[in-house]
Image (cartoon, rainbow, N blue to C red; front, side, top):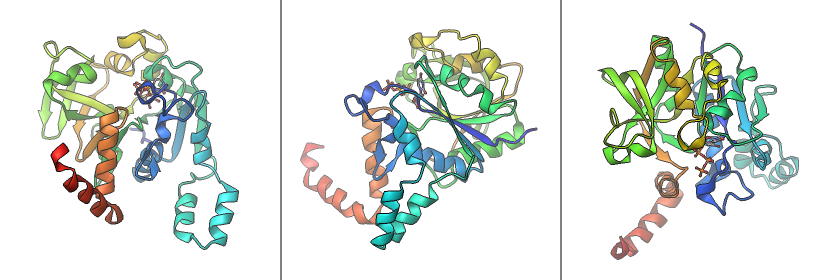
Length: 291
Ligand code: UTP
C-alpha cells in the first residue's frame, strides 16, 4: 500500500457567499483570529506528515502564493525591531524548497474539476484533499486521524460528521453498509439530497484521502449538482471497486465557507486565547439581552 505523501488544496473557487469581501481577496485568506484559513489547513497537513503541497489556484489568488513565500522587507523590519516571536512564526510557515507546487484552474467549474487539474502533479499515488473552508479544531489533526485509518484499511477515506436531517440538502451524504465505532463502511454517496431521500445523516466534510483512479472518472467531466463537476460523483464511481470508509473524526469542525460558521470559528478560536477570552466574555455578558 502506497503512503499518502501529497495533499491538494483547491483554492480556485469564487467565494461568492463572502462578497464583497472576496472581490479582490481569496476566500482562503480570510483570517480566523490572526491566521488565514489556508494556513490552518496547510499546518494540519504538515502535522499529519504530508511532504508535498499542491495548490490549485485561479485568477486573483496571488495573495496565497505570496503568503507562503518570504516577505524580505517585513522580515528585515521585524528583525530590526527585535520582534523575534512573530518573525519566527513567519519563517516557520514557509514550506521546504521544492515541496510546494501551484497549478491553475482556468475556469471555476467545480471542486471535481479543480482536483482534476492536479492530476499530473499528483501522479499515480494516493493523495489527500483539504478544503480550507472546513476548519477543524482537534487535538490530533483531522488528516492524521484519517491517515491512521488509511494505513489500516487502504482505499478511499473521507472525514464525516452527523448533521441534522433537515440540512442534508447542503452536504454530500453517505449511504452506509456497516459501522464499527467511528468507522463507517460506505456503499453509496449522494450529493445534497433532499432530507426525505437522504440515505443517512452522515455528511462528508472537506477532508479526503483518494486513490489516483479518481482522475479517470473526473476526466469524463460529468456535470453534476449545481451545474458543477462534482468530486462526490467521481468518488461514487469507485464504490464497489476500492474500499471506501468514512471516519467520524474527533474534533469540532467549522464551516468557514458560510458566514455564520466563519464567525463561530473566530469566537471559538479567540476564546481559546488567553489574551482575548476576557474581552469576548465581557462583551457577551454586557449584551446578553440581545442573545
Ligand atoms: P465552495 O463550494 O465553497 O465554492 O468550494 P466557492 O466558490 O469557494 O464559494 P461560494 O460557494 O461561491 O461562496 C469549496 C472549495 O473548493 C474550491 C474552493 O476554493 C473551496 O476551497 N473550489 C470550488 C475550487 O477550487 N474550484 C471550483 O471550481 C470550485
